[in-house]
Amino acid sequence: MIRLRNRLLAIFLGATVVPLALTLWVANSLLDRIDHMSLSLERTARQLYQRERDALRADAGSRRAEATRFDAAAQTAWPSAVRDFWESGQAEQITLAEGEGGSLILMRRAKNGVESFQRELGAVKLGTIRREYTGARKLLGDAAGPEASSGFRYTVLFLAAIPWLASLAILVYAIQRTSRVTMDAYHSMAGELQRSREKLLYLARLESWQALARKTAHEVKNSLTPIRLMMEELAARQSGASFEQQASQIVVDEVNSLERRVRAFSEFSAEPPVELKVLDANSLLEERIAFLRAAHPDVGYQIRLDARPAKVMADEDLLKAVITNLLENAAQAAGPAGHVLASTAPGADGRLSIEVHDSGPGLSEQAQATLFEPTISFKKGGMGLGLSIARKSAVLCGGDIELVKGELGGAGFRVLLAGHSS
Image (cartoon, rainbow, N blue to C red):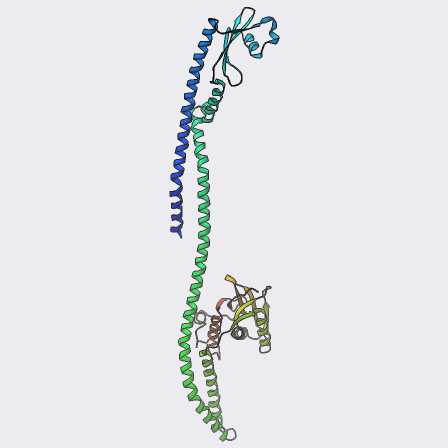
């Protein structure tokens, strides 16, 4: 993911740095061209002004230019420019005509007034040229010296770089956001693959145990049946409480116990058909607890159900067996006056969890390490198959069972099943 991010950044930089640098070079070249053009325009305009000024003076001196006289007795009627010249005390003044500056005006002091001479410049508008030059120099910053000109160029550089920097920031943000989403999806997929792998390995181990269980159950059952029949016959022929009669009954009881274990192995090795459908986990949990209250009247049950509809996809018989097994184990671990907590809650990835906690002594590290392995039992009279069958049933329903930290001080189990939105 880091390589992809760096590659995208490298592509962006490679695709934008050269055009950006070219744009800045072109902009700087244009600024230099404007600078040179404005200076050239200024020199040309100054030369033209000087030439026309000298020509106007020559025409005025030789009287080739027509003079307009302003009598001192009528100063109130003078134009403001003439009056300003008269009051300035100057002997002569040359100015551009107002507006576009298409002509030069020469004003001289004369006897009892002012003489004004005018020379047309034709298509040349010195006033317009002056304004354009002044604007160009102000743009380039010459009014404040070379530092202002450099500052203007830096401003152009900054303004050109803003869109590029903004695009770079957006790209980095998008890459980071996409990377997080991708990494989350990758970790989620990796976690799901790991869970699927663990389920497959567990089912593979169970398959080998099931093959051994089927063979063992068949052979032991064939041997136990004639033994049980013979000992029942012997017990029936004995009268009273003779030693032979008591011995025969003990053997019969032990054979019956062995046959129950054989049946348990047969159930473990069986492959029940799985029919997945939408089930209400809240209703099933309440039903199983109500069913077991009579068997464990001294155990206190606490139910904490999800407020939303707890719909799951599972096989009804298998799920009932899983919940019954966990509740039965919890009640036995809690003992008289103990407590059992059963709850439903939404889990991760759209799944739903069913949890069972007890107030018993908890599980040792040895018990936790081999908890779901078959033929391993850590309680008196246990077959060691209950949790193995329960986890197998949960896996067949598309879920799993995991050991969690107990909320009541004892053990805690969580059944995870695929949720169903209705």
